Amino acid sequence: MVTRYAHSPKDIEHYSTEDLRNEFLMEKIFNPGDILLTYTYNDRMIFGGVTPTTEPLEIKLDKQLGVDYFLQRRELGFINIGGSGSVTIDGQKDDIVAHDGYYIGKGTKSVQFASDDPEKPAKFYVVSTPAHKTYPNKKLPFANALKKPIGDQEHLNKRVIYKYIDASQMDTCQLQMGYTVLEPGSSWNTMPAHTHARRMETYLYCEFGTPDTRVVHFLGEPTASKHIFLEPDQAVVNPSWSIHCGVGTTSYSFIWAMCGENQTYDDMDQVPMHELR
Ligand SMILES: O=C(O)C(=O)C[C@H](O)C(=O)CO
Ligand SMILES: [Zn+2]
View: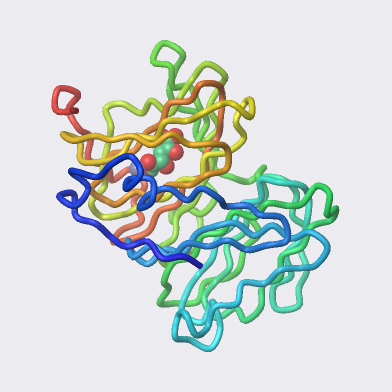
């Protein structure tokens, strides 16, 4: 697990492209047979990829978190964007096909991830946040996600937001998580751009139309925006003071996850267009 520190907006004012990438971009999320995680000091979210092949994989973090086991004081969400697989939670096995998700509550002792076919491994994108209370584990099949079509072709932003872990539907301490699928010809052109000082957010950009597709993620204070070029299956961390949107050279999807002060998805501070710089 690598660590990424929190920054003030002032810190990044003079960052070079390389500095910005080192601090905010996770270049590798899925590595077959491996677990790659990032611990950000922004609200202490842990996020990354679990990609089992021939053997099941389990996240073991005790010393690093100062606890007896990983989820002693945390909750966990995941969405699978790879082949079919399974998760075994405290001995109970559940099949997980592509785009299925899961909420796993505080106090769960063992979570084992497995792939059905090592040649087509499951790719579990996992996000964990500090938790104060145990809420029930819940499988979140893609078909049950709260579907919110949004945007239109005229604004080049037609997409569907699938909410998986959403406080209006289920109990969760802090974590909110979902998946947004862009229509071909549309981008995450979510204007006016917004911030939410109450919550930080991370994004995994995935399912690019071609291997050469690139997504440009915009971040920074509204009056001092910056950008990062992303390859498929890369992630960015977005501080709560930062705008966030992305434009792709072909179609793409992204998984978003938030945590912090509140769980009110629509609590966003829209930035008037003339203020964006
Ligand atoms: O498609 C979208 O718009 C989103 O997915 C929005 C993000 O979830 C977000 O920024 C929520 O604050
Ligand atoms: Zn947001």
